[in-house]
Length: 148
Image 1 (cartoon, rainbow, N blue to C red):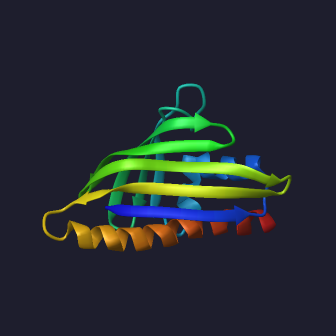
Image 2: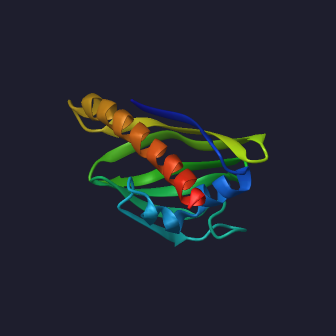
């Protein structure tokens, strides 16, 4: 099982952080993401509940559905399908909490299993390591971008 957990404090207001994280189409600007596209808009907001996004990270192509959208404190997602390997996704959750007016605590969790016989566990470990680096790089990018 892969188990990615990143906790990071960003020197930005919670609304700014949430907007950057929930703007699916703009994930293209992050080094960890090769391609991002909003495939289906959400029920009440463009990037909100039930939105479907396509994201490519490394060799993986992921179709992720937004399952919880609570502006500005939480966004959960579920990987509905993936290529070239199948992923059984258990949880994808990003929670934000106010530290003060200009600082936000972010916790990003993704857990699941890469469905590859014999070597799946090895790939899960590698995915945990790379996913942790990728999520952290996205959060740091958001912080740097706002400082410019």
